[in-house]
Image (tube, rainbow, N blue to C red; front, side, top):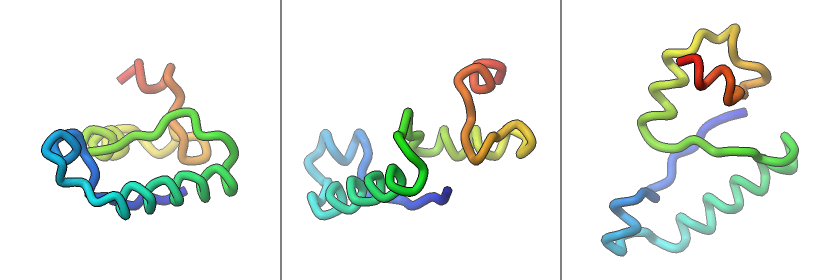
Length: 74
């Protein structure tokens, strides 16, 4: 699993500042994840998911995935 940043976000979308090439790139990336990892249940984005990733001990992550139960325990 990996991470990649895209200049897509709520404020950018609301202000019409999102380049459609970025949206296409993001969709392509998600498709590749699905090919490599199977169906995608949820995708975290923005600073909050990065913060959670740093807060949760690595031993809790299962194949770089965090279950809803584990997330609720935070």
